[in-house]
Image (cartoon, rainbow, N blue to C red; front, side, top):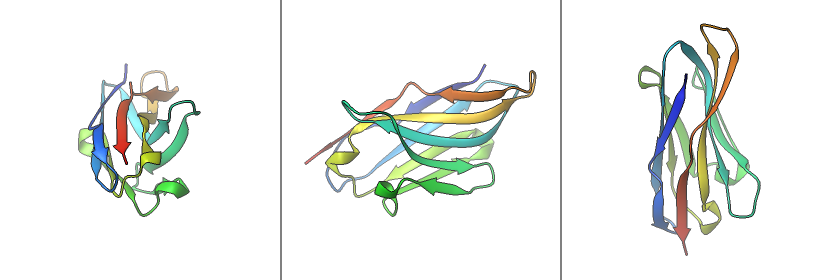
Length: 121
C-alpha cells in the first residue's frame, strides 16, 4: 500500500515563501507522475503543478514563475517551492501520485492528507 505524507504548510505573509514536501512510502510500486492540487475554502480542488518521472513539469497559469515543482526519485519525494505568495494562494494543498502497482499492474491514484497554507495580506 502506498501512502503520501505531506509537510511544510503554515502561515506566511504575502510576498513570502514556503516549501511543501510530499514523501511516498510503501513497496511494490513505481511512480509515473507526482503533483500538487489545492482547495481553497468554498471552492473545488484545482490542479497546481505536476512533474513526470523524467522531470517534465506543468503548472497552472496562476502559479507560473512563482512556484517550482521538483522531485527526488531516490527518496520518492516531490517538493513545491512557493515564492511571492499571495492571499489567493491560501488553500489546503494536496499531493497526488500516479503510479503502477508491481503486484497487480493496476494504476495507482493516491492522495495525501493535505497541508494548509495560509497567506495573510
